[in-house]
Length: 151
Image (cartoon, rainbow, N blue to C red):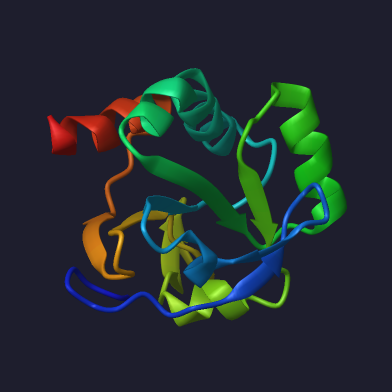
């Protein structure tokens, strides 16, 4: 997993609006790049809705919010439409971005180990460097978890 102080690797992906999004195009802005396992699941929905509900506060603090999961564009569109998500959800079905940031690995559920996406948020500064890494995401209050780092 990438750590604080590391230059964030550039990538290009397609969002739910079929826009081509390139990370480096946001230079000069702070980026909340959050990785989540799956569209329209309880924890992922809470996390996305927390960011939606505080989106104006995020913008007022200079943040651009980008979500990434292995789901495809169609799934992202359905999820974003259902919950009126105002930010881009990037499709990464081939796990290219997930692996670039090192958030794919061993997980445990109900005593079984398996490979999966580790819910993680990276705050990237205006110059493209990772400023914060949040590994213990509070799904139901994630926006405030981020904003409180900058109060």
